Length: 529
Image: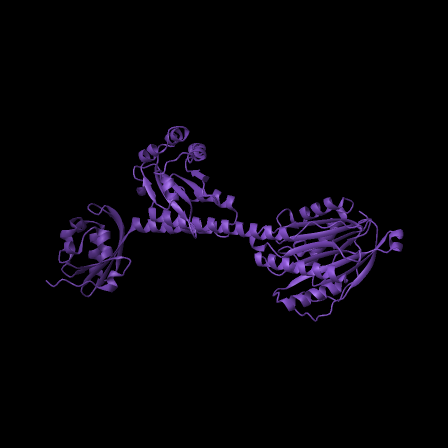
C-alpha cells in the first residue's frame, strides 16, 4: 500500500483531521489528530478504524460515522470517549467521494482555551486605563481566583528593588485573613531557592507544597503556610518593559500545581499585569517629574506694599494633564505690583518646560522695561518669535499702581491686558463681583507677534480682592465655560469675607473637590492686606 505524503494544508489545520476510505481504513491523519486521539501516523494509517478503536463499533461515535455514510449528510457528535482516549470529544463526520472525513476537537482543551480567553479578556478589561496603583493591586489577585488556583499573591519590586506583597486573595473566605497575615511576614528571610524569589529573578517556578514549606524558614510564616493547607505553588514573573517588576504566586490545593493552574494562562496574565503596573509606574514618574518641574518654577511671590498676595497651584488628577499653568507676582521698577497668570498649550513635561521659558521671559521683560501689561505681552510675543519658542499660550497681566493722592483716598488703579485668557474676577470690599470693561479679545501668544495688544483700566477701593486663575478652576467635562464661571462667582461671593489664604484654599476645594480635571493655578491680591 502506498503511504500518503504529509499535506501542508491539512497539517496547518487547527482541528484534528482523519480520512478513512470506503472500507473504513485510515488513509490520512494530521499531527493535531495524532495528539487528540493519542495515536501516531504509523499506528493508524492503513489500519481499519474499528480495529484501532473497537469501542466505536457500538457507541455514539461509531453510530454517528455510519449515519453520515448512510445519509450522505454531515453528522456531529459530542460525547465522552472511553479508554484509551478517556476524554470528551466533538467529532464532525463529513461524507466525501473517497469515504469519510473526520474532524476532531478535544472538548476539554477547547473549553480550557475558551476559559483562558475569557479570563484574559476580563483581566484586560479591568486593567485598561487603570493608573491608580492601589486600585490595580487590589483587583489583580481577586480577578484570577478561582480560575487559576485557590489563592493568589501579588509581589511588586519597589524602585530600590525591594519586594513587597501588596495584594492577596483566597477563594475560601475562612482563609483570607490567614493569607493576609502570611503575605505580611513571608518575604523577610525568604531564601534564594524560594519560588517567589526565583520568580522575581525572571524564572517561572512550580513547586509542591512540601517543597515550598521546606524553603520557608521556621517561624510565623512557616506556621501560617501550614494553616493555609500547604498548597502547591506556581510563581510567575511580572515582566515590565526593561526588567521584572514583580511576581504572581498562584496557590493550588493539589499535588501538582500545573494540573490546577495552566502555566501558559498564568504567564499571559502575568504579562498583562506586568505591563499595566509598569504603565502605572511610568505615569506616576512622569507626573512627579512634571509636577516637580512645575513647582520648581513657581516661586513664592514677593511682598507688595499694596496688599496681601496669595498663590496656589494644584496639579491635575490625571497624570497626562499635568504641566503648563503658571502664576507670578512681582514689583516692577516703578513700584507697581504686577500679577501674571498663564497657561501653555499642552499637558506634559514639555509644556512645563515651555511654561518656565515664558514665565522667565515675561518677568525679565517686565522688570527691565517697567512697561505696562499690553507692552509686556507684546514684548513676550516678539521674544517668542525671535528665540524660536515654538508653543502657544494664553496669559493675563495686571498691574496695580497707587499715587500719593490714591493712597490718601484708599484707591488703587488696576490696568490689565489679556492674551486669550480668562478675565480677572474682582470682588468689591462687600464681596460683590465688579463688572469689568470688556476688552477687544486679543490673540493668544505664539500666533502673530505683530498682533496689537490692548489694555483696560479700573479704579479699585481698599479691601477689593482680585483673582487671576487658569481654566482648570472652572472647566468641567459635560458643562460649558459660562456655567463654570458662574459657579466660581457664586462661590467666591460666599467666601469673600474670609482671609485671603482661606478664600483661595476653600475656593479650590469647593470647585474641584481635590481632583481637578486640569491643572489649577491661582494668584490673588487683596488690596490693603
